[in-house]
Amino acid sequence: MIANDTIQLNDNSSTPWQRLRGWAVVGLIIVIALLLALAGDKVQLALRYDRMLIQQGQWWRLITGHLVHGNVHHAVLNTLGTALMAALFNRTYRLKSWAVIVIVTVVSIDLGFWTLMPQLEWYVGLSGVLHGVLAAGAIAWWKTEDRILAALLTLIMIGKLTWEQTQGALPLSGDLPVVVNAHLYGALGGLLGAALCWRNLLAMKARLNATQESA
Image (cartoon, rainbow, N blue to C red; front, side):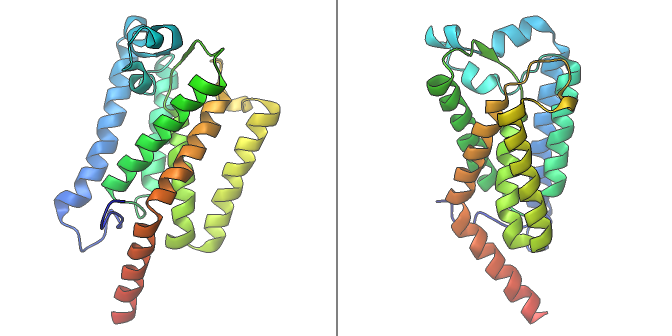
């Protein structure tokens, strides 16, 4: 468990650098994903999740596979999703907690692929990780936002995952094949990551209540 690990990114009790660095990390992820997409197919082939090559010892693909995309359009959609997640959940977890959530989400997706989808030869994209962020954010909203908003977000997430598991990818997913199980494994990883940070989320809520009562 990470001590003192959840706080609003724009909380006045934090320093300007603490408030800025969370957004800087988001910006860095977006830039890296776009640059890798612009680098072309050779880079994608060198970095994507590839089961056969991972078996041969190229373990970095378990991480880099989530940063490369099928094409620039795919990368733009996922980076827009990253920006949206940052905007929605900027008042929830602190940077260290988000690091825990993202790591657990990546591990959950990779384990799901490796153990439950041995037929999956390759995979690219950030969308699975984004679903982990969405799940963790939905959990946090039950403590940091209006309950109606939290319930609405939770229902949207559950509805999307249910549709994908029963009907396949959403119509707006584009021409690229979508590995919908990546979204499910990512969401489960996000829930686990949020559970690991739950104690600190409660502490953050208590501090916010104390601040409001003393104001």
